[in-house]
Image 1 (cartoon, rainbow, N blue to C red):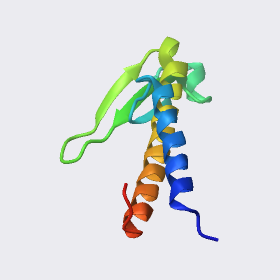
Image 2: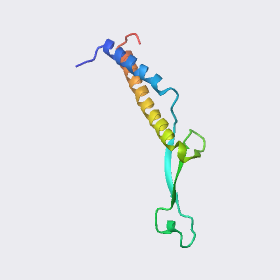
Image 3: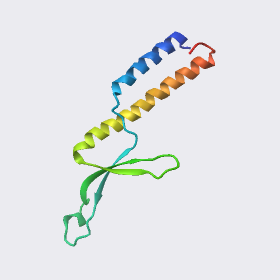
Image 4: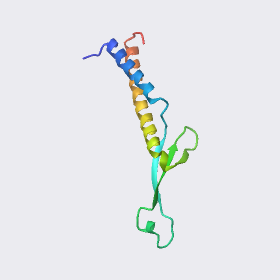
Length: 110
């Protein structure tokens, strides 16, 4: 069953309305949790996971070195939310683009 162009445009409008909900609360990158061993003899980290967790965020850029920033523990939950929002935002934008491509294939007004 083919979805009508009007239905596609309504879906696109619904998706577009969702974009405002992010209110700028987006971050591109990956949040990384790590544990480090200090190397001191007899330290509990020698037999366990290590000291931590420590959190950092890595962002890759085209034709540039990746950037890596330490994230204080107080900001980890917020950064997780913002990174998750970025992923959701990308999904919504891709859905909007798919709809627009379909409308364009039909040679109808975008």
